[in-house]
Image 1 (cartoon, rainbow, N blue to C red):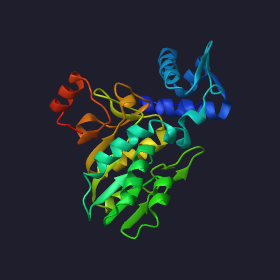
Image 2 (cartoon, rainbow, N blue to C red):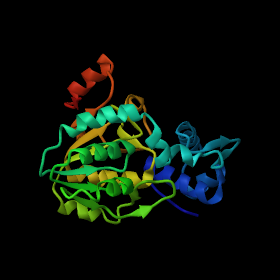
Image 3 (cartoon, rainbow, N blue to C red):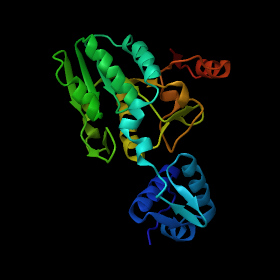
Image 4 (cartoon, rainbow, N blue to C red):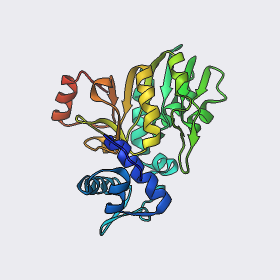
Length: 258
């Protein structure tokens, strides 16, 4: 039996996904024993994770068979909201000055920003865990591109895990540009990929300013794990007009809105 005491929610849900990926199905009773948590807690986990499309609840348990990896694959995400991502990248480029060190996460929105930077290059050091972002920028002589190493997972465009995170402590990063699965004022920036999120937390710590690139579909949503709290976010760049309530909350939180 695996005994885990005082396990945080995201750690518990990560273990649920790991078990489902191996076994394809699980019962509440069996997993409660394995993780030493109550069945009521697991039912709440299953309910929340089903809303995220991470599993499918069954009578007395859950299965992984209904989880559509294509929905979360990089190629699928890259095709969504392309016009909105283009508008966001135009705004983001204006914040970048020559001779800065910037960090681009592995999101499709950050890749759009990379393409725009390539069109009008200036001398930059660019740190990324995005495989496609690094490939996009590799032949531009004005750019020094640093790819953070890690693990490649099926359907992902990123290098994940904190294997190479120590490198971040040796680099002075001026601006971090990141997207997310969701954003709200309770949880901040959240994502579904528990493996990449641990690295993104280290990226946030290493960056002087965190700039979130969020299209309209990301607001008011939360995903599995928080990687940046509200007080860690400097600026949010979006494509549309937010509600007055959101604008007021951002002002109170000292978040610049573009």
